[in-house]
Length: 164
Image (cartoon, rainbow, N blue to C red; front, side, top):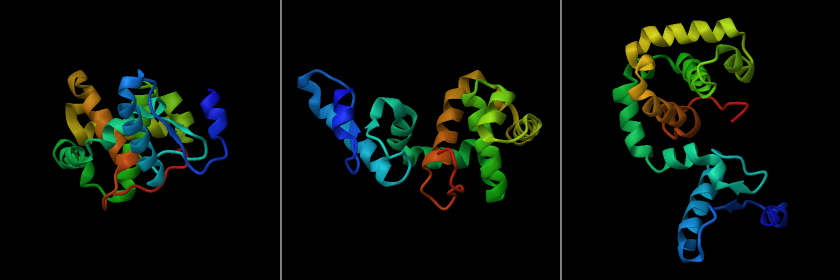
């Protein structure tokens, strides 16, 4: 916490995980990866970035090539939709899953009516089939959606989210 106070007002800063001194290179490596995501505009850069507070983005960023390939395979029906439809559905599903499948909480985060969330989830169930109900694929789906919504650098780039 003292380090955070000392870093305030600097251009960009990242704090890697706290590790024993013998593993300082590991902490530095993750801090650099965090800064790279700040520079890409993926992670916020107003305050010093605590890498452990952004695990999904850091983990997904380490596997972007694999996630790119998997998107076309695992979420092909979603990827074939026009970008504006894919954008709304992807953001809704990611937020819904992050809110533990609670349409009311997701609607509050997305600033849409809860019926809109429920409608989109039904559309996704029709589009993606049983993927949404398969507990063995849940973590995979979360990683893919996180990559698509928050990290995707390709031509599939979704429109910027207000809440990041």
